[in-house]
Image 1 (cartoon, rainbow, N blue to C red):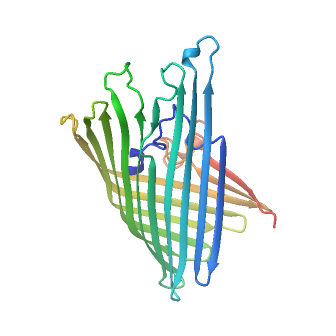
Image 2 (cartoon, rainbow, N blue to C red):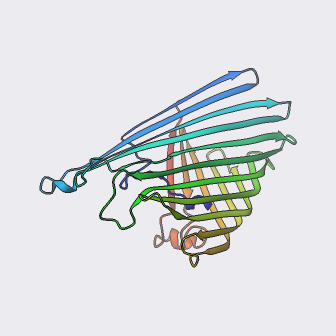
Image 3 (cartoon, rainbow, N blue to C red):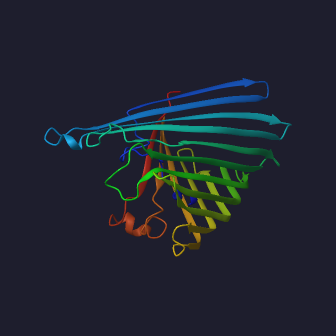
Length: 317
């Protein structure tokens, strides 16, 4: 839930999608050396958006948005019962906005857009049917824009605006095989996030920052996946957490807030095998009138859709 504090894309882009790219490619590579395995993934995309009005040329504009993500991972066996896995990531981006109504073609530029992170976990085989997995992760980054020219239509005269954020989580998971063709997954830990907005005026004066902080302590999750027979299986996962959010506005002391709540969420799904095809579904469990709260209303056809996601896989072998 703390991730909801941060927008999907911190770049100024006039509403351009950060996930639907005009040009996108991904390169994945791996190498194994004795007991160590190295992996690398590079993803880059670039999008274009152009608007032209023959009758009102002063509203024409062109947008470009690009980003790149690099992930390097390593896996190593430690003794007979343990295995270590870790990865580091780096993400950066750029944008360009050309507006015909401005005196200068490009009046905004990227400001400090980059992020980095690390994920670590250790697998320990406690027994043939129990696997213990401690884990920790941390991500930090920032993103914003700089006004290259003073905007006379704005009274704030903001020269630069940036969001600085960080997230972390730590805990331990346990994977259990209680029966044949059945796996139970549990985890407990803590997670948190923080976000600070930073503004600087053309006069050079920094605007008072607004700070958001979030933490969930603790969170508990549980998942179950089982093969009911040769052609059908089910999976279910849920989590419960106690969370707290704090908002601090340095400019307006009356705009301070602290929120506390207990959250619950769940996902439920099926998979079916038909010869070489596998159909995988996720059942809606997030609406007010969903499968878990009122299944009869959905099966009768008067409620929300039953399946929120469906995928079809074909095995050539």
